[in-house]
Image (cartoon, rainbow, N blue to C red):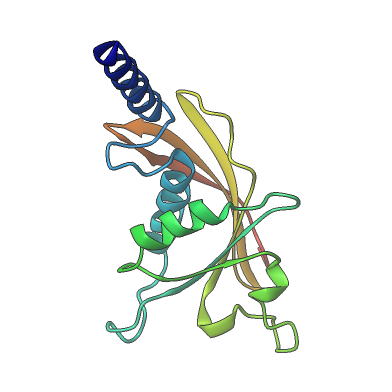
Length: 166
């Protein structure tokens, strides 16, 4: 009887491990959502001019668009993944990131604000709309295309939809 119970416990435990491997996370355990946010931030940072002081990390604010909320566990995963790449802030509202009282309403700390649409349902290729905002005179809307590369979701292409002031 004891060996049956032990066997049942082992089967249940292995089922849990197998199920955990099927949640869209990468081999490193990072969730699909965290992979997509991380890839988005890295893609945008690669397109930005480097900071004038190489010892200072760029400041990035991330906010969901409309009713989109970024789960606390996803925020934590992204923060750990990008701690060497950027000084990352997740905001509940875009107003938290923007200095509205200053001319041209720049992002706090000379940073960039990423307003990210709701993440799409998982499919072979996914599109994500992201507003990249630096000030009311310097912003653009991009569509990022994601695909699975090895064990990670990665940005495979981007298209600029519009630019403010153009």
